[in-house]
Length: 595
Image (cartoon, rainbow, N blue to C red; front, side, top):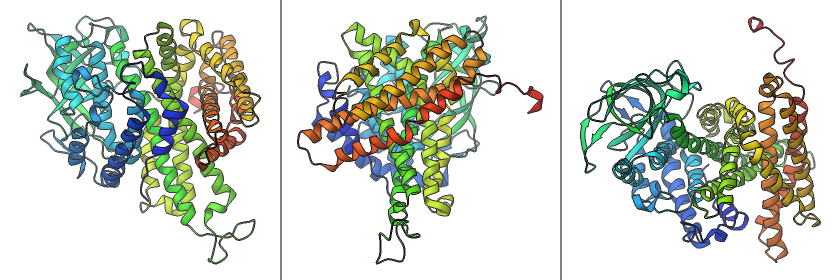
């Protein structure tokens, strides 16, 4: 089975659902015509299908190799693939033209990132983290830091990492111990150990720009005393050439369940030279620029790897002969029917497709909000889009990775015993996808962030705005017989989400355990409502094409998958609402020592 990038679906979403042409007055969007979007998607597909996908199994089998000299060798073919990746300009697709980037909308870069993660998730993590480092320096660096580091990151000559986690702390970054001591020359000496650092060492680029959270001497306790530092592998000279080796080393690699082709490093900083980025004791705020981008990227991974798994399952189901259809033979000349005729196999494939196509729309819609937040000249639009980015990031990250893993599991089930072997690709997809539910903040933490912080921000302005947009979509064309079930389904889901939101407001403050116990169900209810909103937008675009005389079956298929979502997936909202309203009593009933 070979991966095929979903170019048709992405182009439909970008051009016909999100209608990027309507933003041609914004920087970067003027160049993003439908023709150029099609060219970028097709070239991206060729690269991902032809270069990255063949290396996916190689990376899984070979993994990365650490040597006692603190170097890491990536799997065979990765280095050449990265050279091609950088030379083709993929590293700077959406980056600032002032630093060598192409300046195209970030939403288009997200579409390409999905292809890359589907084809080879472990490989795509390397440049993905480099773009996160670029974003943090672009947001908070000095003019000198930007001039020195950004052109190298944009060109792909250098890569970047984010260094947060330590052996004694993961989510609770207030416990970090890595320290920074100011030097007389304006630099700092960074000492400590960081773990689980993706791409912390590799042989793809000449230099690696580590962004490291550390605590200055005398800094306040907890997260209020954390600063962010640029700590490069090689100290750059003013002209960008490489100087001496810094005392920042990879002390070893983790043995992992999946993503073997990505180096997950233990990093040791031994009075390494670093430069403060942003203000002292304000590092977490700046790191969140990178972390939020990474969380959206992980949501993309949830869709991406599930897409690859679904494709493998659909192809297997059409080829595998097993039993006869309960409705009469469908392959009378053969010894058995293909398993795709069986309703339960169809259930798994349709579940997958309904979530994937709605999830892809949600992913690109959210990425567009990020573009509008940065580029719109209208203050109200920037505020609304910024609200949506904050509100939707935990929903997108957690919901799409939870469901993405389920899709990979269903893909293995479609394969039967074959899927449990390493002869077929779905076992790797299942193993690789599992980390997405954990890193960049576990999905449980995302749910707590949603109910504990994001809902109440600015007096609930973001969620009220979302409810208003949903109401507008329901009212728009609600009398159309094709769109009516999509409007009704969305309205029902919104009503349940609104009821859950009010319940949280009433019970969460009185008993915080109630909010915590409800958080995951609330997030999934929110995710389902968001996908119902996306399916309403998709259905409208498809319906307009059909009414305009377009006979491409693509549009009729969209409506068929959307109706399946309404009837077989969206009803899960009721179960989530019922569960969250039970509160925390039974969940917290057992004493800790009873476990």
